[in-house]
Image 1 (cartoon, rainbow, N blue to C red):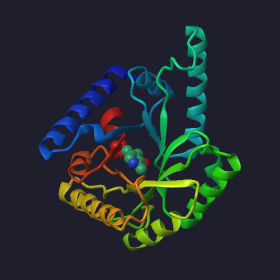
Image 2 (image 1 turned 45 degrees about the vertical axis):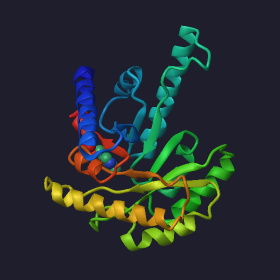
Image 3 (image 1 turned 120 degrees about the vertical axis):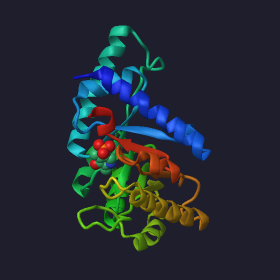
Amino acid sequence: MDYESYKDNLKRIADEINDTCARVNRNPKEITLIAVTKTVEVDTIRAFLEIGHTDFGESRPQELVKRNAVIAESINRHRKLAGLNPEQVTYLPRWHMIGRLQRNKVRQILPFVGYIHSVDSLRLAEEINTAAARLGLDHKVKVFLQVNVSQEKQKGGLAVGAVIPLADQIATLPNLEVVGLMTMAPHTEDTQKSSFCFGRLQEIFEEIKGENIIGPSFQHLSMGMSQDYIAAIEKGATMLRIGSAIFG
Ligand SMILES: *Cc1c(COP(=O)(O)O)cnc(C)c1O
């Protein structure tokens, strides 16, 4: 485990985010860096929390459940040891479910997940809506619609033409809040291809906003990974999902 190099990487990426924002005239505060922790130990998540990094992404629901339980337990123990009351909280994690989500896993993650980035069907949205009601959640579940802009067969996500019809339908579900759109660019070093893909998602985003299909909650673009986050920032990304550039 090499926390110091992880933290150095985090700092370097934060600097690059700032530089890119300055160049394209954006406010870096609009951008959340999600550390994708699927390849690292839970101790790394703890170490990041200690320095105030709170956004974490996982791609497998089971892993998310397990890790949340371990972290919650150690936060409680730490609070007791330190004699803290609940207002004097150390940093709490905000979990992002970024991978494929099967309907039968929805119930397990809903109680604690912050955002689900991978909604790509009405059936999944309906399952989330129903499960949220059953669990008696006191908040709406924040979701992204995942779009398969690059039309790669192996990728999850909606076809471009299916996004607006689905957004229309989901807007009627009371326990869900669509906060934005998510995509993965093709795996390539060709930044023009990634850039094109992100630009396309931005256009669809603006179209949905312009037609006011969803309302004020709709404000995010989840796009940009280790290889292509600079291009994503240039096209308006507000949530970057970065794993290997931090953790190697
Ligand atoms: C793994 C993963 C990432 C992070 O990928 P890196 O290339 O390691 O930054 C981002 N988004 C999703 C959906 C992932 O599964």
